[in-house]
Image (cartoon, rainbow, N blue to C red; front, side, top):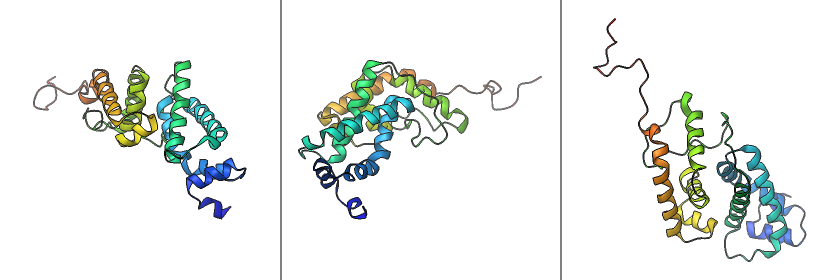
Length: 208
């Protein structure tokens, strides 16, 4: 088993297609964390994300013998996960779940969203995440997928293009259009309202 763990991705996939009963499990273990990050960000709900990921792994398990090596195995796996999420999102409207403290990824970075503002304080992080997720759900799916990969998960445009199987310029265009649509919905993150007890004067308290 230790020797199998050291094999490159393509060799693992080849061995799986040839009947090795350990190779695919090693491949899943190697890439599961990042594939999970893609799924949970796209679906917005951990249970839906888990189901989509299982769909994707089953598809990859069955399709291994059709892999021709035009892309890296990791890109191929990401594409299958994106397609599984896309199919589920088309079939149902997914409501965002309340994020937990052990989320592996933070809210979409404000800098990548066009410098919407500084990072939220701890008390407002959950609300901000839900605001971002709700805004994302209003976008066309092609823009949502591109923004999820590039702005939320930090993939380079070229990587996202390979995963989505489109040109890099298409990813850039989808991201630009998506950001433009998101900004009005998320303007309050850039210009948060002051607390009710803050005055418009020089910082002193209201006179009694």
